[in-house]
Length: 229
Image (cartoon, rainbow, N blue to C red; front, top):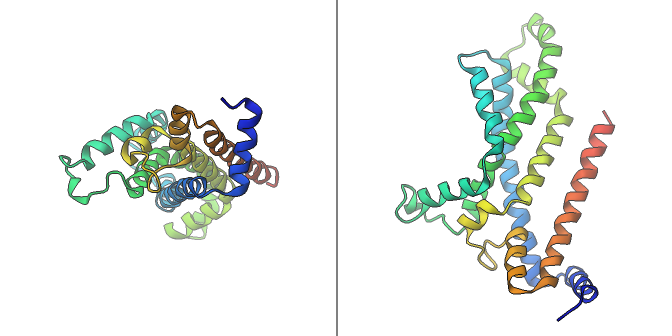
């Protein structure tokens, strides 16, 4: 059995050599998480701004629901999607189960409350600050939304980075709907679970180190954005 030193050396050799198996897993993981983050951001950040600038019935209740969904377990999301996209499910004919597409859907659902909660909190403060001025010059709602989104862009980007870090490290939902299939739906987190169970600790460690490096990079970006305000 390899000792700890050999495992670490082998892990870095895998990373530096960019072995095909390792490279495929990393690319798949980044593709799924980046796509999910972009899709969720493009749809739900403007929606968050729309919620902020409008007063409507049950607005507070909607915000409570969004905040509550932050605690939604990823495995519940995976189970729900598995049921409705399985052969017997209502969307079974789409044949999305065990594909990267269903993994993206799962991650989008997972980060909707994260993106919306952080975006609403950021946008609300900016809207309160500029509301009287924007109304005094008779700005349209579209102009108001564009303005407050631009003024709160740094906080929004921080929220997006936080959401990306969250889905990149997620394992519960995607292992259920993706099936952890080699060269198709295996990500860094599901790969770590599998390789550890097989005793392939060098590969598992290489994936774990890669996740940590990405997380460290994200935290540096968040720090720089917050200190340059």
